[in-house]
Length: 508
Image (cartoon, rainbow, N blue to C red; front, side, top):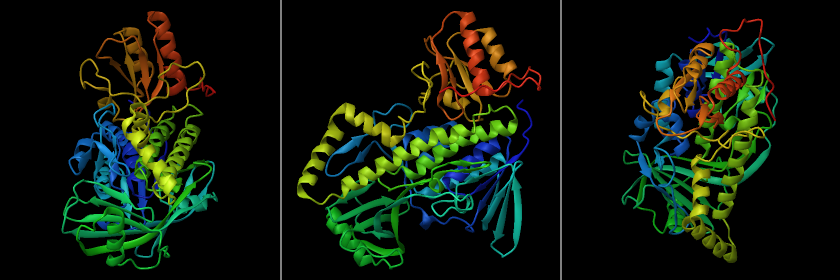
């Protein structure tokens, strides 16, 4: 059994990022409370529709992917500009597609998981101020009825969006700029359903996208270069229909709008994801254009990276460098997504005829030249995300772990990742290695036998990335290498006296 935790975590924000993190912490036995300023998220507030392959793999490890997939439509290709499509069907793994489902479905599934695991979710609770000291963090909270209280936690995570109170209270800047203004949103009925699940198009001065809620309502996202209005200006159905006709060739009989809004899209990233006992994740840490549908996915992957590290710290076995590695690993990913989505947006909005001709050639290349298409699909889906590896490390170190078959129950790797423990996948059934994992590092590591012929032994992190691997076949040398890897990643052995703490420096 893992050691009893010595603290708790307060999460500000009950969007997909905060809810996934809450579920992970609660499943690891960590006391966890989520504060959400809104009384309860409503369906028409959803903005995200795309759940990409890597995010689905992380949800699969948590046992909720199949439930979420049942709520939406699977797209084996993403339509680029014009007739070309980016083929996702060749992606590795169980999810060679993008799932189109409203954000509220993702939140519903994650909320249910978090509550079942024991997390507390407090709706109508707004964080207003934050103070931290060497032992913990105090967060002032204002409830919907006007009452106020202060909550104390060992750590706080700001998953409270673009206007993050946690980020403001930490005094962190949010540098960047608006990249597109006056983006219009509307939920409408359609007289004519589009031929494709996701319909998008541009005419150079207009852009429109139509996505289904799955219940007869559709979300329309539209932008008009000719009319750059302030966010506060109302959105009329006539304006939306005009932009759709120019961008898509048809407005599909839009009618009966139940909700409209106007906003601007920024490119911003906070310089630090951690300040003392406070962390930022999701839109509180990075925000970018909606091109590629990666925003919600990136935030959920932030949460998957941070959750097991906080749990390890509160269980008392985390190496000294582990919490700092959250910023070191996720900041470059956020920067890459920000740059990539910004480039896609600018690419779609070019005006000059010669640039539009160049765009058409680039789109054809991305869709038809297999190496280029593979790289683009891997980037958009998140499958190709990898973390830095020390010099001289095995070629697999830092890479996404494939869902390899295992010998015996539960039959595949990702079924062992749901409880927040490492998984040591061994190439041979070696009692000495099994003892290392199950006894000396008890409660931190599962030991599993690879289901196929391989010479590679790998230590897989709880977030589904390869921490360490080797191809050593000599039993004594392999056991020694495994012991060193476990000590580096999983702290001192359980059978070592508490006063003999051995915290290794992170390799560079």
